Image 1 (cartoon, rainbow, N blue to C red):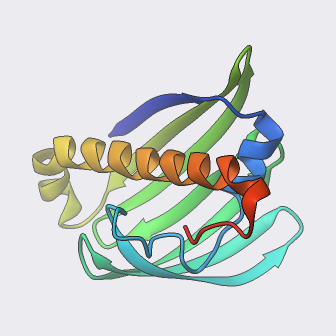
Image 2 (tube, rainbow, N blue to C red; image 1 turned 135 degrees about the horizontal axis):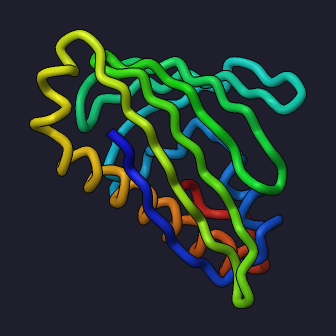
Length: 154
C-alpha cells in the first residue's frame, strides 16, 4: 500500500527541514495530536538518527525507527509496526512561495497485517493526513512566533 500527500507552506525549505527534523520527546504530546506517544532519541551518528516511540494512542505499540537525513531535501524512515514494515519519506521541495512537503509512505503488511491492512486502508490514509496536517500546523505556529519568545512545545 502506498500513501502519498502534499502540503505547501509559506516558509523556506531550509527552515522547514530544520523544524521537521528537530526530533523531540514531546512531538506527539499535544492534545491536538492524532497520536499520543513518548519519543526517545536513542542515538545520532552523522546523517542517521535512531528513535523509539512508545505510543498509547491510536494503539499501544512501541516502534523502533531508523531515520536517514538528506539535508535539506528531506529524510527517510524505516520502522517495523506489529503488522507491517513501513518505509516513509518526507521530501521538502522549494516552490515560489515557500516549500512543498511531500509524504510518501510504503506499508508492506506482514503476518496479521496481510488481513487487516486491506480493511484499514482508508483509515491509514486518513491518519497520515491528520498527522501531517498536525505537524504542519505546529510548525506554522512555532515559526510564526519564533521571534516572540521560546518556541511552544510540539
